[in-house]
Image 1 (cartoon, rainbow, N blue to C red):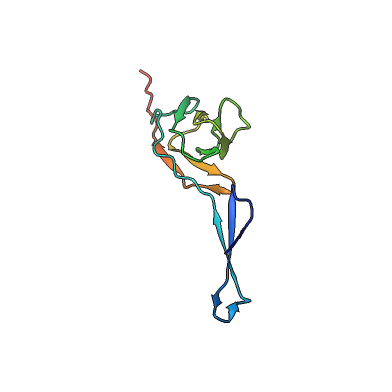
Image 2: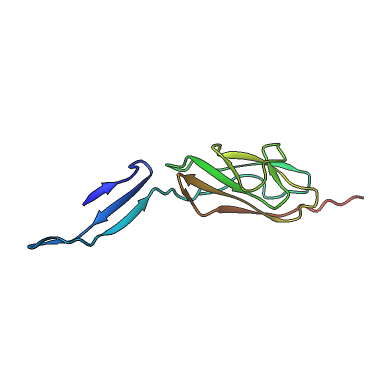
Length: 133
């Protein structure tokens, strides 16, 4: 077996058969890439209204180098309107500002390493109805 590639990120393993007559000329390349787990739980307020800014966080994921956050279209992250979904950061918490017409949706986060992004963990959000008397 011969291993080549960047040993810290991805591995390619070249496998060929050997018998009494010697090694075969044919071989297969098996790629093994680094991965990371899905964040366990998102904590934060499950109620949001348009114009609100809420903080959401999760525990660090072993091996992750960054986190990709998502929310409804028109929402933005960490106080900057250009930080729209999907938003990538090394922080385990973000501030989400909900657009004026926001009614319902999810906040989601996935962990990332090299060329791999995990599945999203999501938190379903609802809107508190505000009544005027």
